[in-house]
Amino acid sequence: MDKIDAMLITLLQENARMPLKVLASKVFLSAPAVSSRIEKLEKQGIILGYNTVIDRQKLGYHITAFINLELAADRKSEFYPFISSCPNVLECNCVTGIYSMLIKVSFPSTQELDAFIGRIQRFGNTSTQIVFSTPVPHREINIEAEV
Image 1 (cartoon, rainbow, N blue to C red):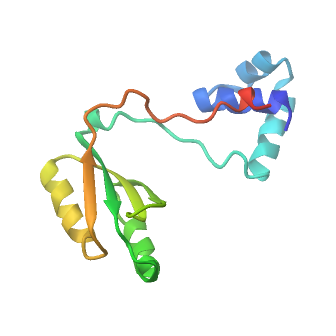
Image 2 (spheres, one colour):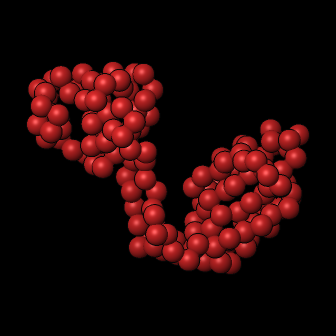
């Protein structure tokens, strides 16, 4: 990967719907050359997909929370399919420390969050933090700084 690939990735992270013509003008290449580079990055598994960023609050999901779950290693094979099937789970990470899972969720109400916590407590002890604000929203790494 060179500096042009890094620039393309940065531009696509900012706006995945940016037209090829605009991308090409920003990296000083032709649109077919940019298309070829993007296809190569996709085939290499560097670009995994394209996402739409939504405002969950405007859709009625007013509660975002992080749930720490103490999960025994021998329960992972049962837990992973369960947690993957839960539509309100935004992210689930296996982490170090007392709690082995860190789960990010979003719900319309605290009552629904509470019901979900009750469902996952069959796998182990939990500790939950409700988000008040997000001063740094989700972002990707700046790979241009690394290249």
